[in-house]
Image 1 (cartoon, rainbow, N blue to C red):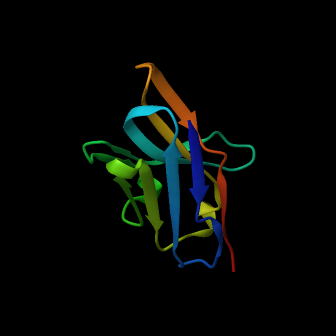
Image 2: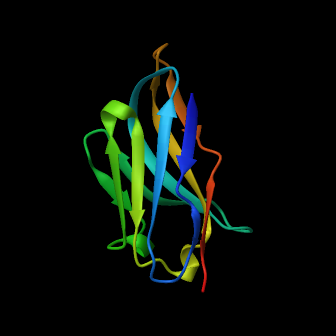
Image 3: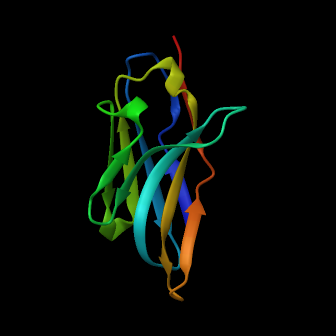
Length: 119
């Protein structure tokens, strides 16, 4: 299973970015797709997740600014990030939790994409 992330970059405070993640490989189903982030010296933290049924969870710090969505048929997840703040600077990781073609539970992470919010 491979996760390919895109969309990171440098943006000014108040700006927007859109992250995308595409999952491919021996996937039977994906229950949860999500984004996490990590800054040096801190633990990786949940940003937002979305289930196959469309239920979402957001970190309090991003509620009202970030929107997560997924396309089940394509095994893709996106996150629209608006009103970005300097404290949103981090490496953002895509994660999937589901079942592979051998009907085994799976839990995969992407390699991460850097988001830098700076003037």
